[in-house]
Each structure stands twice: as structure tokens, then as C-alpha cells.
Image (cartoon, rainbow, N blue to C red; front, side, top):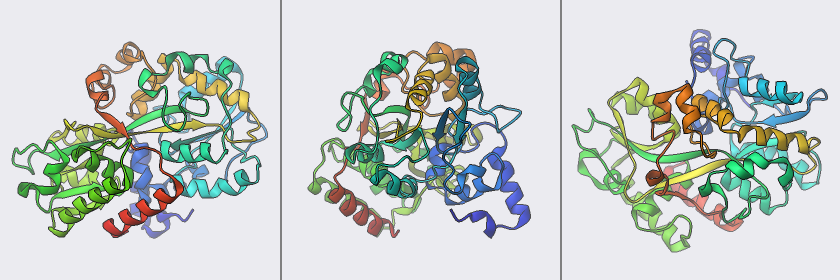
Length: 402
């Protein structure tokens, strides 16, 4: 991985590293998904040194766990420590080698695919990948089935709405780590009190012209547009997708859209340069804490959702131990501790009482613990075929100018 850090001056580099490592929730996992600068900066600190290169393996480890940066709880005094992992080791005696070496789904897949294609060990026992790539991994036969006997907590405490999907209907190959939601956000000062309530407002309302941003993540942006069109992200056709692309293109041509962004919408949304946008729920927890004038809307037409999934690659050396670790995180007290740190929605049922003990504000925040009425509006974009993925990504890249 080439570090963006090398292009920063020493004072700027030092300030950026401090911002990454100071305080809980300074950046979310989804922020890192498209945050090129932040991804490069991770290599600068000892905590995130494993982000560069292929750092799987470890002869003294009982389970090797690869995850995204800033996607687990950290000790307030020592950012290199993760209390839940330490508790797991205390309870089981199993040592975990935890590496934050997943910075982009495609990049990580390209790194491990050669070994997987040859049926070889990736030197990782557990990995966290977004559901669309998890579906591809299952389709290609690159992951192992869970042994139900080793994950009783997961089987018992998995929230009902996550219990099956089109690519893993019986939850044999994957268990969710967290859910990601795409919502509408706006700066009330910048909109002069106007409250956008739908994607249609973002694409057409004159009050927002030139001050709207959409996301560079194709599934999130197009998923939201499909919903606004009355189409189902779970069942859409080629014609539906093309109509959604055309709809956004018209907004681009009319200069309604300021730009397409990764997590870098946060600063402009806070300042008001972006009046309204599509935003990720985990980011909004932090943005609202710093900018009270920023509000969010859960559209009546619904919202796009996705999950990051826990997968055990083929030939993993410590499959049983990996399953024990997954099962550990499906205990409500542990899940609540994780959610309080990462700000994303937990797939574990029954964590409200536990979260109340840690952070009442977090337990009552619909961005973190949504009500059943809210979760009913969530829609996951269906798994794509190889051909669809190629065509859709190319069309979206042309639209965004990527």
C-alpha cells in the first residue's frame, strides 16, 4: 500500500496522526472505506502498522483476525489495546493476532485471491468483508461453513432480520459484524430551515442546487435512488438500474450535484458548503456531536443498508478458534461494548439494556440502536453477478467521473 502520509509535511502529518488516535470514534470504519488520506495515514502509527503489506499469520497466535481500521473497541488510555479481545483471551486462553489490514474490499480481495484460487491458506482465520464481496467469496467457494456447535450464541442471538439472505439463506458461511445504513443528512443553517425528506429532494429541489453530494459507493447511491423511484434494491433489473443512472445524470447535468464523495462529505456538511447529502449513519453520530446543526432523515421510501460479514477463509489453520471468537462477540454485553465504540448497528439482539449501562445516550440514539419501525425501512442491494458487477460499476464510474 502506498501511503498518502509521504505527501504531507511533518507538522500536517503529526496533526493528522493525532486526530486518528485521539478520542473514541474519531473516524469510523465506513469513513476509512473511501478515505484515501486516512487509509494512508494508518501506516504512520504503531497501532496501525499492520495496515501495510500482507501481515497475516503468526506462529504464536491461536486465531488470526483481519479487520478494517478503527472497527473495534479500544482502551481509552492505550489505543493499542482492545478490551474485548483481552477479555476473550482471559476467558479462553486463546491468543488473538489482530491486524487492521483491510482498507478496501477490492484491494484486499486482490491480495488474498491468488492463494484462495489455489486452495491455499491466506494465513488468516477470520476476515471482515462487506456483504457484496462476502457473497462473491461464497459463490467462488473461498470460505468455510461454520460448525453450528461452535457458535451457539451467534445462532441464538442473531437478530431475526439478519437470519438469512439471498447468498447465504441459512447463515452457514457468514455472520454479520455490523450493519451500515445510508441516510439523508442536511445542515439546517445551510438549507435555511428546509428539510429534505427524500432522494428526490436531493436530485431536484432548487433550494439545494449546487450544494448536494452523493456517495462514491455505487450500491449505496443507486440503492437510495432505486428506493426513491419505487423500485426494490433486492429485485431490481437492468432497466431499473439504467433508469436510476439516468436520473442521477440529469441532476449532474443541471448542476444540482456539487460532487460525489467518500467520507470527506463530513467537513463540508459541518461547514454548510454541502447543504444536504447521502451519508453513513456511523459517521453521523460523530458529525452531529461536533455540529449540532446537522440533522438526519430516514426517508419514507426507505434506506439502503449493508452489512460487514465475518468469514472464515478456506484452509484457515484455526477454524474452531475463529468460531469461538465469533461466538464471543455474539454475547449481548460484548456486543454492546463494541457498539459503544464503533457507533454502527449491531446484529446482536437484546443489547439495549447492556448499552444503557455503558452509554444511555448511545442506547437512545436511532442511528446506533434503531427501532423496529426504522429497521423495517432498510433494504440491502441484492448480490450481483460477475457480469452485472462489471457493467454497473463501469456505468457508475462514468457517471461520477471516477
